Image (cartoon, rainbow over all chains, first blue to last red; front, side, top):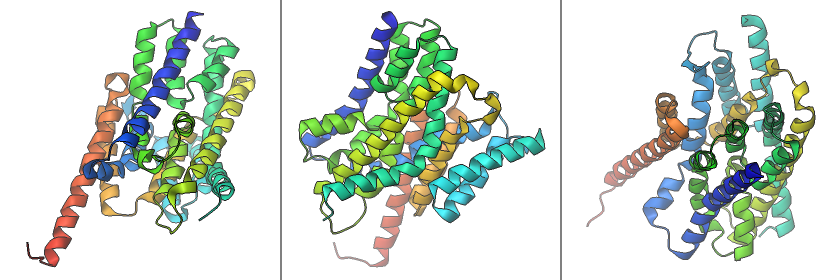
Length: 105
Length: 241
């Protein structure tokens, strides 16, 4: 039962975070500086999630050729840049990871 | 102006490619939750109640380990803090909607739904803002359904997926597919690069606070670069004060 209460609290907190700015900024005029800042939210946040995923291997930074996630990620970045296609990017990235793992391990 | 139906269907259509990355991640969550010993009903319900991939993946081991509720909820808060930035970002575009719509759209606000929606919201077109929330709803609902389906599959058959498939990598690939095509000017490139560098250094900070620090760094650097550019270009054509 206690587990359920914790999960419900997690849900309330998450929903609150998602709702509060929508409600607050719906009532007041958004300052220009905030509007300018918000444009950089997607590149900043998502890159900050991706980079450690590529660099860290078993809790350590690994920039060697043995880090297949880094290599596959770099390939995916090039593919995303050239094709601008999510399906191709994810597909090629996974295939690159599998092929590189098979070769390098 | 596009009809609400067209906007909705466009939202669904634009979300679909990202599901290739999201669904494996949902299956991993489901598989992990039951592997850790959480009741299957709780694991499935968490996808509906919390509906936030990264905090579910981080929360499941904490729950299974019997960690205190306060710590788990606080961790959830920090991990999901980035959604406040997304929420602020969509706020001006859904300002005119009823409270009921705002509640619904806030619930559906995830990384992937936000990414495709904000692209639509900021598209310079003659169409008014008044039906674009249907695009958001379409994208959000599609992601929601796929998350529920994939995490449920994960709960029941996820144990059959070998670790060597590295399906968790699909999340990083999804974000790459979202970010890279949208780096259209120097300021957004600077925002991404500086956030990435900061994230590499702050990764070990407790409770994923490093992620938030990196995000703020990226936003600040992006704004600085943009401001410098505006100043330079305005000095090209001197305007009398």
